[in-house]
Figure 1: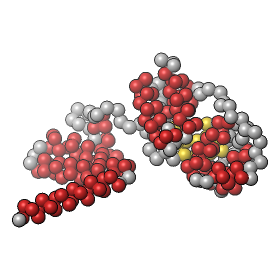
Figure 2: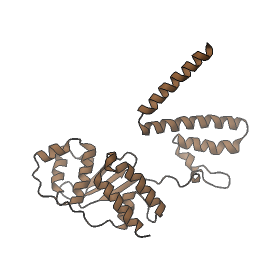
Figure 3: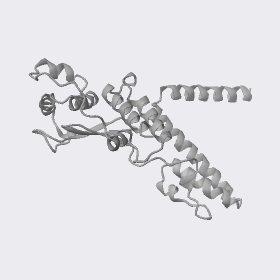
Figure 4: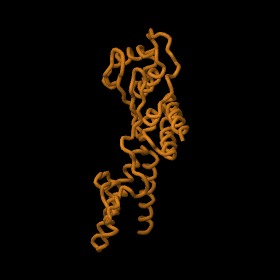
Length: 243
């Protein structure tokens, strides 16, 4: 009888855990699992330390702390000066962002959150952050940038992320003239690196990996922007053609 009760409890726990997994946000689930694994590893490290196996416990503890988000773990070094952060391949590059500029706008895209932020470079709102503009000001800016196709595409990508029904509102009383839908000059090598969020001199493998990672997140089929996806493709082609 006791085995039946225990088995039933285990099955119930597994059922609710599986249900939680299917309903959880992937990003949140990843963080929860990292915290859980990190906590279990720390407990195991404590056991290793108590039993005198410090050589194994120290690097494993550093890894556990990195899972828990402790930046100091990245500076841990093994005897001989080998850095913990060097294990398992290259570390995550700093500032996971892409930068794209046009005549009127400079935009920055966060790779993880897909959040767009930007600043106005020219016109009546020059020097202002897009996040500081009210809806009426954004509408006026949208009208102002119509002569430049790239600026229009960038601003509309930002508006899509901030205002769900902006197209209906903006087009309803729009007096904007004919827009220039042509793209501006081709990306420079420096701009291509910035679009992919890479440092100058990145290898072919890094270029392909960055493009593959970003295009999955920013492709229109995944809720991204067609313009940003086209810029990613252009940046990849620009950098690969130099090799």
